[in-house]
Length: 161
Image (cartoon, rainbow, N blue to C red; front, side, top):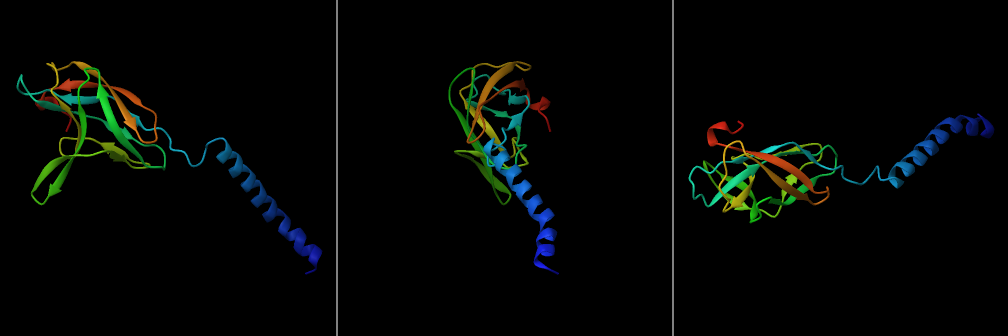
């Protein structure tokens, strides 16, 4: 095969590679690569304290990450102010304990499904709450913008399973 025939044969693959490179460069330039997609969540729920002078309660949300880049929940606040602590249950054999944490992982392409058995937002000294009441929260993340959500106050027997 002559040199000119070899160059002619290389034309389509080299052209395809050049086009792919140009498209990827454009995609990156407009922010399509290397950035996290914002996390998403629907309404959550707050556990109704079982005694009137409860020192704390907890809130739960399911946060979905539609992108491939992991994110982290780094904080929360609610309409009543006060302290909200991110918490995770540490399993130790048949026992376990709760421990505050600086962040909760929201894996890329996955979700953080808070539950009484895993992770939650511990709310210190909540005001009186009533079953069925809706309350406002703002969740903050390492990469995603702040997420404003509502959560319904539920009695222990009504909580999602």
